[in-house]
Length: 455
Image (cartoon, rainbow, N blue to C red; front, side, top):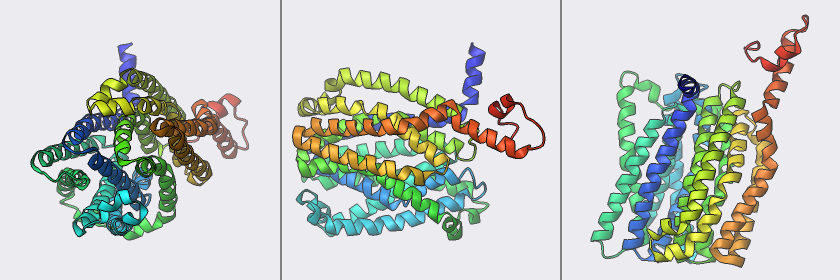
């Protein structure tokens, strides 16, 4: 049995190791994130925490827009373009960095017109530059994290995110202890500082390893230009996918209040730890099968199984301990955010289906086919969340969002079941076998069960 276990681990080492690094990253950043927002809740007034969380959510949304689909494109193309990894990564970083800074300035100037709650973002030149720089740097760091997963070097993003979380936590504690003027943009600034410092070791490592062939790290716009249409597809797809969860905190701020958004943001941050398991598994599933589809059925069974088991354990535990966990942030958080957190945790199960559906579509280069269902689902999430907020406050918003996820999962599940059973792979195998050998009769069992024959 021990020998079989080691054989199983060796067989699935790429998925297990890189998924472990992503989950480890989420665990470390979540624990340090709890500490971060605990310090924010203790040292800053609720309206400052609410503004900081809304600004952070806006930053993440805009940085996702500025990534232009290049992060996901790198996950797909790095395994398919050996020897050109450095050029792809450096070109992507330069592009998203410049676009992010420009978009950040534009949004800062428009923020007061969008909502009075967001007015501090564009109140001063310093705030405008801070917000723009944060979007630029955040987009670049996400590109870096996805690139190292594409290289199957997940430990590097683990180290970077750990440094990021530690730096921003220490910085927040120090400014909370020393500053008397405690505003939301001060909290926001610590994110930028953390991203800058955490990225420096990776930059030094890349330059050191490529010191003998620095030309391979130079941007090559022609390489990226060839992949432009694919990048645009991924970009639109990513924006649609990420918009609901990034917009939800902004909706709470606008529809309810910044103080209520502080409660919701903490609850959603805790729930995201559960969601990260399925997201990490499908990210690595995408990277490991982008250039090798023959094992997709087996790998999908593995990732769905792991995600379901961990979802049952983590969501069940959180349902029982919601008040205790939230009490670390203060009594108001435990009183106001406990039921929203319990409801949000149930979203882990439909997200298993949704995340796998997306990964499989990307692997098969079927992003266009998935566009309409994802658009419909994202609109449904925002509509039901808004309706829920109007009818039932934070709990109603959380329930509306989870119901929308369940509806999406219902329509997406057939693709997952077909992939797990290997129906699509079997059909393709039979067709390719019949093309390869039209003169000699091939046994049906061989048509159905062998991928080696085709290879």
